[in-house]
Image 1 (tube, rainbow, N blue to C red):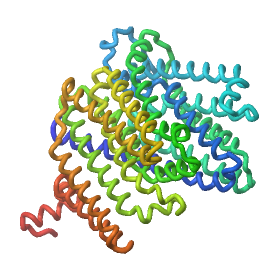
Image 2 (cartoon, helix red, strand yellow; image 1 turned 180 degrees about the vertical axis):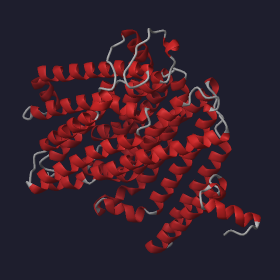
Image 3 (cartoon, rainbow, N blue to C red; image 1 turned 90 degrees about the vertical axis):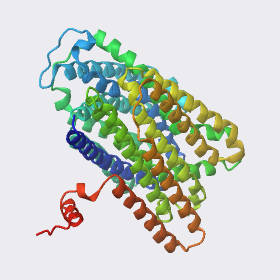
Image 4 (cartoon, rainbow, N blue to C red; image 1 turned 180 degrees about the horizontal axis):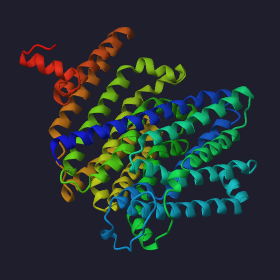
Length: 509
């Protein structure tokens, strides 16, 4: 592949990332707007919002278990040659036989597991509800069990949309899901003045059913057949990804689970609330990482057989770090404005924001580094790295939260992701070396770090408006460096024409 083709591929990746990013960022922002709605209609004393928080945390873990890594596994096996799998041919309708075979097997496998899970929940509903603390409201349990089962099933058609590069349909359906959710929540909690937290679960179920029906064309586009031999190969590839996913979820929520057990103060719930609210501000980095993952996974697997696949991964890593550093500076530079997303009583915890954002950047780097073992079918390494990182995170929480409160939670995430990142890089460069431009990456990291330090220094000297002006100038300076180093103006359409002429001294019409 020549430089022109590589550039075209990078532009395609950037376009898909922008589309996925729009749906992810807008979606998360709109869902975040439900927080003041819920908390306004359900008082803290009622425990209603606590029920919602608890249920959604539980379903996040269940979704990882029920999909058992089949999204990433689908990308890997859909792009492999049939001869590599040593399986008899299977024709499909509407798509290539190999994606059809993998899609069919993955969908039947996930659907069977999700259906079995829901049936078991129904059979043991009373003891399950009692164990979870919902003995008086078992309907919450079965409704959410049905919802997460449907979400697990539809994850495979969504993966197929990404593999087929149908980013617009993917984003449209995601936004449709959110729009229905918002409208129905507003109708019930504002229009009907409702207060029952269970209606949030019923609404979620309606959204899942509607969006799944919209995926009918993908689910019916091929002849179905389950291949046990293929599923065995896929499970061997997938099980470390499941462990990786579980560890990833725990890395996101373990601190919030452990905090009540290890923090000794009577103001435990207040402190945890401050931490949780301030983490919301830092979640813009998670949105960027998620958007990049949606576009990057099918892109990398699709390029895995190209001669320059390692160079593409190296370049993508560099640009990912550049843009996440820019996002970091934007959030930190305008934090005095962004902080009003949450009430003033929570502002004491804003000092965790840079730490949590740095941890999210490292999580994104871990995602980029993960492709060496995904492409070489050594996914067990991912389970090792993520597991070690999770142990570090839990240990720091248990040891230091009693003394330093939620600041220890923030640093625990930083340390956990940092350990996983370093281990993945060291082992990866030994087993599957990729020519990452470390000097250029280090340069950007250093400039961003010094820029943030200068922002923090002048925040104590300048008035708020002066600090915002200075921070904006620093951000513009960072963008200027990016343009000069990696996005020369001569490469841009229209603008590049005049830039080239100005540098050569030619006149332009």
